[in-house]
Image (cartoon, rainbow, N blue to C red; front, side, top):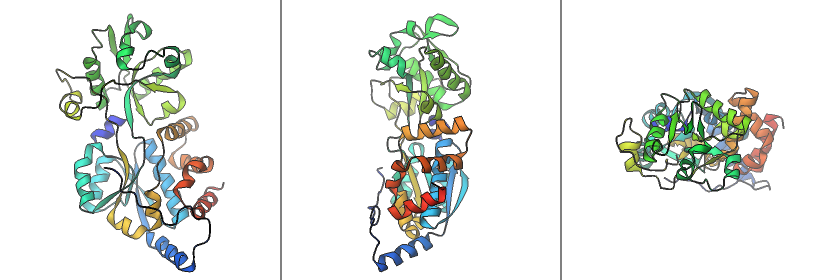
Length: 349
């Protein structure tokens, strides 16, 4: 699922881990407390959001919470607005592993302040990103191209498929909100006056195909994309600097509005992505909540995993097991040595 759609649909309160990373056995009282906490974890409903990165993370959580902490985990279908609204109003599901909160920040912050919900870890510590990108091989060949303005000085370098005398900026798929923001960015940066045209990619497959085709032929490419995504795990791309900060007031009033008459230059917002849990789960989960307060991965890690999923035609459960088997240096710091051993045994490492 593309980033701008998620955005239309606070620092994390991170708890200190009391037992993580200790290799020596705990005293008997601590062992009993841990056992009680694991038993009290009980049944846990985890939102399995309907885009790849969230699907994988939900399945990772299912394995670690089940094998490592004794929880009975049920994955339930989810999406940003329905899931977070249900958590705020009904206290279910218990966990939203990858919540893109920018578009629902105000009511979500209110629920956190009232103690009904809690922010655990940042699922993506480096945030979700979007903007205009070029292939890395092109960036290496043309180190002078670092910003959007730099790229728009070279229409000759990015010839349009059906108008070779003009440069091309590849647009977001039709019907997606990022199509609006890309069109407005094109206006704001004066793309037409700089002899560029917007290329309608038609669909996500069309946009991905244009990048794949450019890479296969080592040709220039300029256009909108976002992370984390499978395509950026397969093809190394460089995000161009907008040259200006994000202007939220301008963005909300014009740059994200269809047919805005006078959009101005503004960077895209870096999306904040948290794990959100209910208060009831936090109170009973014990060490399981400590895990969710520690767990997070980078866009590069997710990009590579999504690329593997695409190549292998794998689902979220397959990808979660693959991740836990092959990237222990990423996930083992999230848990204690004892829990890590249980998880390794569960995935058959």
